Image 1 (spheres, one colour):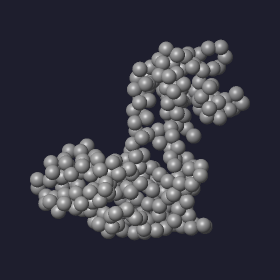
Image 2 (tube, helix red, strand yellow):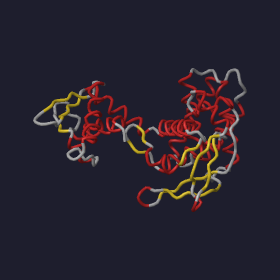
Image 3 (tube, helix red, strand yellow):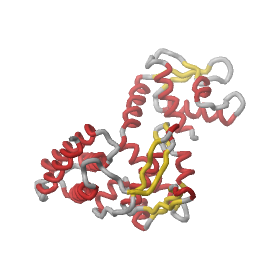
Image 4 (cartoon, one colour):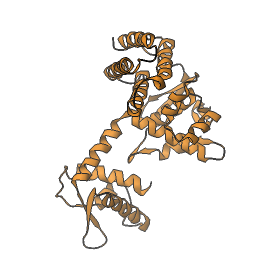
Length: 300
């Protein structure tokens, strides 16, 4: 792991360790013990920990004090507390996590001469703001890229997803410099294909299989048609860039059957409001009607 990874983790740990007390001075070697960093035996581990602490200091999130020996002590600042709150909120944001892993998959594949990412290796190092991504999050992102024609997913031994290979459309996405979901929305050509989903088992590991996703009470074809229409209409709405990004995020939430019904209902309501507000130049009546029907069924 990198110093940047540990800087996020150290900031969050300090916030918990001090109970948000900006007057408390903490030995950062305690964090090393929690993270199993052998700072007493390894100069490299010591350097990594100190570099992470210095990153926080340069950002104004902590003040550092050298005591006896090489050990650093850290004290949180108010800016550090605000940054920790922001990180915690982003970690809880499913759309932000999906955007991050989508971008990492596309960029990693684009950097490879063959346009390939080995999913097992990627999962082992996939992190978001100092927190490890789950197997299911990575495979859901790979599924998304597959479904939208940006990549193909090869199946290895045991019928498990093994590698992700960029298509020409995926290369275009990487070279565009745009967020993956924004690129997909602007292309207006979502691809259909088989879906692989993940199921949690003990210890948080996932078992995967190729099959069709079922949405209780909603025909997959009905929901897929609505999602397609929403993605097609998104670029035409009279919304600013931030509003359009939020619209696209809500489409993904509505399409995600693993989300709680109340979360999907809220997304549906926001989509409806955006269609009503920004759809003056496009025919959104049919989309609104379809949205109302789907949301009614999803939420019971």
